[in-house]
Image 1 (cartoon, rainbow, N blue to C red):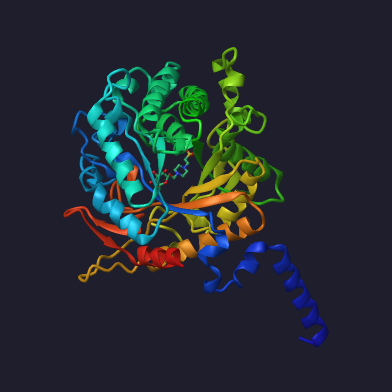
Image 2: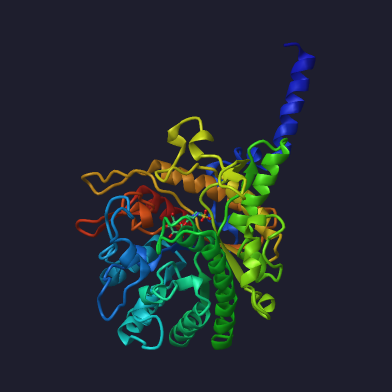
Length: 478
Ligand code: GBH
């Protein structure tokens, strides 16, 4: 190649680099991933959920949740496991919170099991359930961490499901009662609240695809749950505000950066717009007073028949923050299946060169996706936290108690660099909570996928800090 064409080529490459922020990121050295770069007030935490860790499924007056019953149905959980014991956090919470604190986290995000507080769903309050969360909250505070409380992480009381669950409009009063009880008992010490964990996931997987509890399928039922859950989302916010005026109130969303399979083809672009409306916009936009994204997602038009007078106003609530939960990006394409949607996602294994680039969940490692989705959500103008981000990889526990989870460490570094990039470009991002503290019950996947920075031996319930946990400890002490 002569000098002139070499220069020209260099210029083209340089232009490519300057246009793509992610390319530039590759030049960041490891030392650049310094905790202080995120700012002195940025919060670092670990996240968990009641059903996934607590166990003690029928202890101290707890009622049955839809996951207690669903997990015991034939063929619902991949490894045939259930949630009776999980990580036994119910009895081991002191040890676990000690460990979290020793790793250096500011925040412990956990969820309350509705069925410990109100075993029958409504009315009778179980004091022993209240006592348990009081112990967890007090211990967290005593260890110098902030408790961040999720009200609902997918474990509806079975007795309420028997009456239709989230597809029954009465759920608004059931949920309101539950929120009120939690606010009254915990609001003096808990100042950071999340109403829901991923409404799209528990309505979509629970009432549309049927892969999660309660395992129902059907577009109409799903649309009902979308509307009633949206009303509960805002109502939950109002109840918290009324009871705890100084609370920081939010809710969390599963989010994924959506790209078209071929951006030059209109049919794929339209499919991507639909996928984005479905996965990312369905629950946040009504809360902002924007209504449902029906125009970009015609398949949900049927939701209108469930909207009653006065609902439009009730859907809105001014959240103090939103929690973004991100694992992978999505590539969408035109598709004849499913009918009326005419859009589907490209399977992750088709996006990668080989399987080693997938996590144990079969998800594509796609760090730039978290940058893209933060930038997209920043446009809504609400302060943001990453309330979940992490990965499952196969782990091996060595005889000396070590777990060399190299891939997980790399995953966190790559995603964090992209989070930092978005923050440095001005996104209103205030904290990052990883998913998750220890290996736990991964819903329909059972106990096989390990997401923890702490390894759990489910036979002995012994915890072992993985290399990723040590990496975090080092990063946080900086
Ligand atoms: C989170 O779900 C959960 O909050 C957590 O409990 C879980 O353990 C963790 O991640 C790891 O899986 O819109 O219906 O098509 C995140 C995984 C990604 C699952 C988005 C639902 C959307 C399904 N979610 N996905 S849907």
